Image (cartoon, rainbow, N blue to C red; front, side):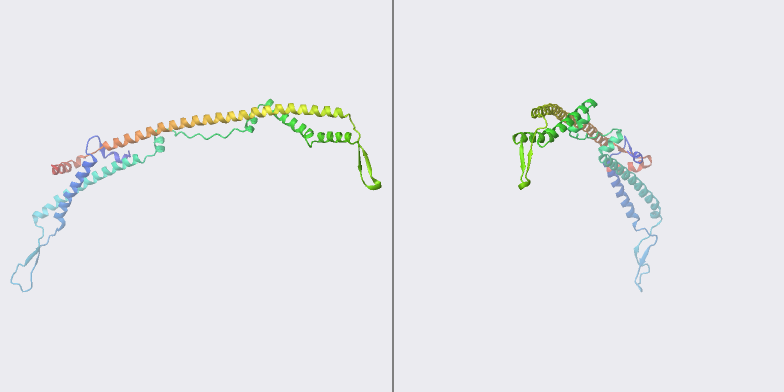
Length: 296
């Protein structure tokens, strides 16, 4: 509660309803007193027609006599005391309503700050673990082996696969064996080419199949590593997702617990403020007792 509002309340006193009712009675007393003072004048006015036989004329307004003049001060004192009573009660009711509204509008975030509690933050959804991420996690030996297998596969494949230099040269050798001669027709200047193996064709075949075997073994190891990398990426993604769900559930539970405590505090605080009684100051006690008798 704001410091400026505390002076209005205590454990004993008036409810807001009683205070408002007495303030309304005070307003009626004020209205009655003001009605008595409304036509205040210190001049008695008479009216007559010119030439009338009557000397006194007709009285249309009677001024205050000494008895009525003596009532002015007490009436004004009474009005002032009633206004003071109303001002105190109205301000007290307004302060109480303001406190109730303040608690009702007190946000969850403000309550957490007041309690010195940190609001749990929602975990971020994890990124999918990629094969590149797994490769980046390898130690030096594993990383070097992976790069070595990739390099061997690329190097051998470049030569022995279809269109590769070794593959094309082998095909050229086989064609030369099948067709040892070829011509370039140009009339009397026709050229005849003789195609003679420069190396034993069987040795070429031996080297070719040896390279193929090496390539297959290398590919097998490389594919094995790639498969393991893929599985590890899937495993990490699954683990991260599972961990995220657990953290999210934990955050929700924590948030719900705090929010429940916040709502309980809000209800208890509103109930406490609603039960506060408005102080009747000693200076207002006489006015209070007089107004209370009017209710009897």
